[in-house]
Amino acid sequence: MSQKEIQLSLLDTEDEPQLMSAIVDIMQENDAHNLVNFDHEYWNWQYKNLPTHKTNVFVGRDPQKNILAYYHVPYYMGKWGNGETPYAMIQDVAVSNQLRGQGLFSKIATFANKHIDEIGTKVIYTFPNHRSIHTFLKYNDFKLLSSFNAYILPVNVALLIKSKINLFGIEKIIGGLSDIFFRIFSIGKPTGYKIDKVNEFTDEAIAVYKDFATSFDYGLVKDKKYLNWRFIEKPKQSNFIFTIRNRNGEMKAVAVLKKDTIKGIPCLLLMDFAYSSGDGSAYFLRLITSLRNNHKQYFNGEVGLIFTSMNSGISDNLFRAGFIKLPQKVNPRPLNLLIRTNENQDGVQNNNNWHVTLCDWDVF
Picture 1 (tube, helix red, strand yellow):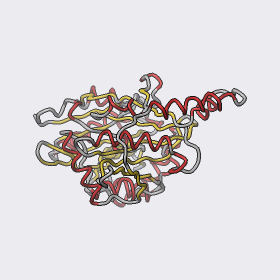
Picture 2 (cartoon, helix red, strand yellow):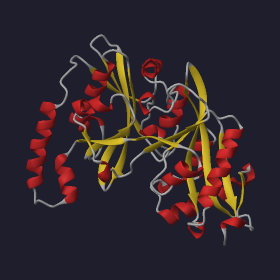
Picture 3 (tube, rainbow, N blue to C red):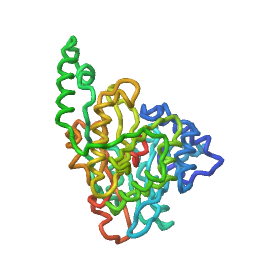
Picture 4 (cartoon, helix red, strand yellow):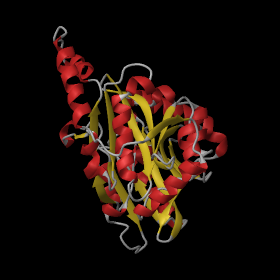
């Protein structure tokens, strides 16, 4: 079959069951990371029940009307100048193996981006993998804004060693010494703090997020509706929400983590965070350090490390909490932030003006 026989269109609501089957088939072809969690409920959460309730889904069909390609574009509210605007985020894009290498991805991408422009979208962003990034750059006029650094914070060094090599128990000695090292040299200030594990985003936590948003010009608007949708309403997933207060009881920072497995190692992902202006960043780093040092108190099961990746102003200070920057060549999945905009907005194409965390990436 040739890609010339494929017809492109927006998805009709009555064709959603067929799309669900096509997604599962293509995920199985590619041994996708998130196949285990995918079903129609998950799709509804991601593309129908999102805060804006707006998603465009583009599909490619063969002459028998079978869906062999899809291209999802949900919309989220984002910062724009002194106000807000819907950001289009391209995600969950795939082509069936039987049509790979025939230019169908470029064809559906061009079709979708033309529609996105026609409805007046101001900014589009995405995180393509190494197989698709050239299409966005060459054919769809995207700009590579940043290739995020990845960071790991060792939690159980003995477990990390054991996952790679059997040292017949010696790894426990090495790991114990390493754990002592991290406890001694991790950030020591501020003192007199209180950490709480919570199950909701209170108005006080939202106020911290709102204050934090003044530190960057571009990024998602993370209000209560968005945060509840992303971290509490998401099916088949539990996230851990932590807050830290100073000695006067004022909330200074919020962090959201989730459990995952990377290359066979049980880990925690630092999905998102916010901290108040002034000394809030120091409290945020103290929060992460305390979670590492007291992980058995907060998390069930083994934890080998904390992993995160971001485009954020605090990146250069993560080492103060013990984080180690990974060389890009060993990064399990580099995040490449691409944007496209037809607006001459001040600073929108400067990565230093953007704040993006793992919660932006749809895979996690």
